[in-house]
Each structure stands twice: as C-alpha cells, then as structure tokens.
Image (cartoon, one colour):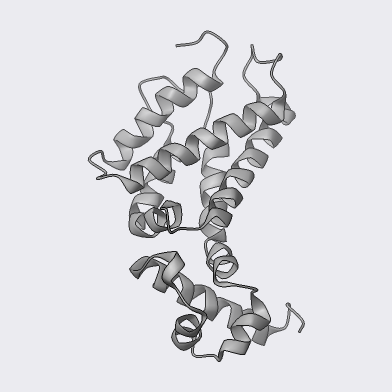
Length: 193
C-alpha cells in the first residue's frame, strides 16, 4: 500500500474521524476494531492495513491536537508578566476545553499511554529546539537543555491532564494563568518568582 495514494489518505482520514468520534463518546480502551470499521464504513482488514491496533489509530487521530498544543507551548514568550498568561497558552487551554471530554479520556486510566508519550515528546522537542536556538532563559546553564525541556513538558502535560480530569471549576483563562505562574517560576531566570 502506498501511503501517499489519495485513496489511502481518504481511508486514513475516515478512520481518524471515526476514532475521534468514538473516543469522544466512550473510553479509549473499550473501542473495538469492529466499531471503528463500522463507523468509518470500511472492513476490519482495512483498519489493520493502516494501523496495528486501536491505540495507534487513536493516537494518530490526535496528532493534529498534539501539534497544536506543542506549537502553542513553544510560542509562549517566557518573559511575559507573572499575572498575565501569554495568549498562546490561553489558546492552548481554550483548545483543550473545546474537547475536554476527549482529552479526559485520552489522559484517563483507560486512555492512551501512547498519546501521552507522544504529547510529552513533542512538547519536549519543541522546547528543546527553542532553547537550543538561544531562547532559553538565563540562569539554567547548569541544567542540560533536554532535561529542562522534558521537565517543563511533563509539567504542562500533568496540569492539562489534571485540569481535564477534574471538575474544571476554572475557566481556560484561569487555568492558563495558574499554569503560567508555575511555568514562569520553573522556566524564568533561576530565582525568579
């Protein structure tokens, strides 16, 4: 199968749409290949032709979301004031809030470890690239760039997972500000508060 063939791309798009639709309605672990095939209007063999398992399909279906989250995190100006969350961070939390149920399922106990790992890895890579490009805050030279980036990526994934899994009493703006205050302290110049 040629993955660039238009028919293959259309089939994968239908499978990803079916996966997102099902994941928005039920726990990821309970999604079956049969249900995916039925929703995408293909046969089970077609699902396996494109993806080894449901988790790989659901993770691939979330790839645009992963990219959006990683880009938003990488765009945050690290010198923004403590009491005002940067707009890309507010947009990130607003994006997550728009499909909070889906994110809650992806991060939940029956969710996708593959998705969580992909999100954390993508965030780490975006931040490490930013830091390597000279946009790393002063005062952290004694910490390797990749460790610093992984630490911050893990923090963001953890806060987003906690926020979508809870009762989300705070609005996206407030959640972004709470995260920003913690993030800025951990990313700003050593000793910055």
